[in-house]
Length: 107
Image (tube, rainbow, N blue to C red):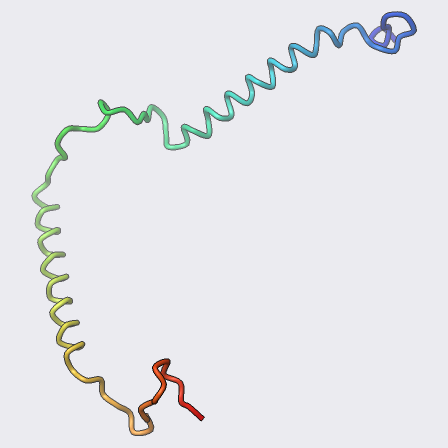
């Protein structure tokens, strides 16, 4: 066969000297493309430079109203939690206070 014809007794094919550098360059190029793809998974045209972000965020009136509504709701929930924490917990008739700090009954 023609590809097996090497120097001398044919133990080493001649085309290896041409293919090995091409394969090494091809593998390096494939690795570079794969790393480039993995680093850019966020989408097309995304860069992490300072010129990409706007200097001042855009404020919408609907968004501000929603933020205020959520703040009021959080304050209401905090006050309800503080009121619940201030009251002693209702006890069940079969509950007995435990003497150990872990809450397990000692035998």
